[in-house]
Length: 204
Image (cartoon, helix red, strand yellow):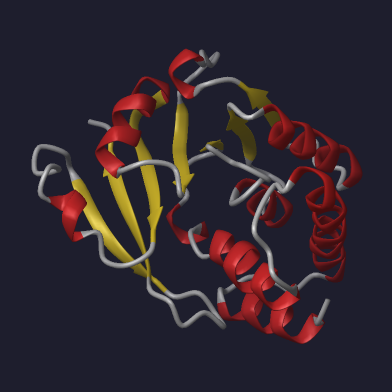
């Protein structure tokens, strides 16, 4: 994997391009390539797409994470949760998905990458019960924001943030969200020309 694109992107996002963390990202890429040959976990075309569309896209939400307990709903092959957990080892993450093969990959990565700050949960979010409310819940390519919030809000602590990662400006979703306290944030992903936005909903 090209170090330059990844390092420059990480620095552009205000993070430290620590060699150990970059090494873990490279290990994640190699492992995902191997698993994809059998399980087709995610559509990654090449190293550049992996760096921009998966890693840097995942890390772009870091300024909006609130608190210490983070839930990644519909994590798939571990995005955005694994890159965030690598760069924020003091935060505690739960990565949740209902698809068994994807969670098996995530569990294997937690071992290979040595991420003691992460748990994996194989369950539908509607059926998930946590010991305490999460400070932030983040979703990526999961559902419309209002639907996602309705499925997840029971897991949010009071004042917690629900973050829905989106592509283009989500006009269609905003028409039904007037009753929810929200804001739309434009995200800048280094090396990616496509538009990215974040819908942030606060639990009152």
